Length: 84
Image 1 (cartoon, rainbow, N blue to C red):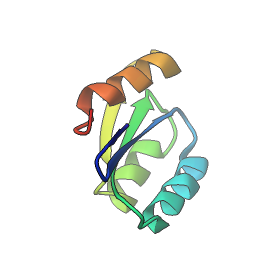
Image 2: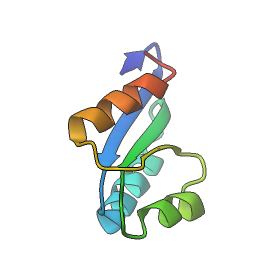
Image 3: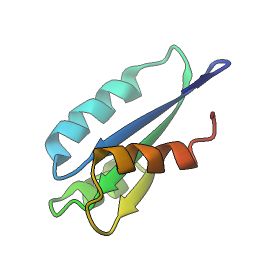
């Protein structure tokens, strides 16, 4: 979502800690715009929650207690985005 110079990036994920880490490091390297990064953890059972809390404290995280699917995860992200 784009409003002015601020961008909200919504990333649904489930049990993909290593891939998510790489994606977030790539986003952190982007400096062209102010970004709000929202990760929606769709009931991960791997190290995703711990990795997010430890390595990416500035990322907004929404957690689903039970898997609701990618579409529901995206909608949850849009619901908390501040640039919509």
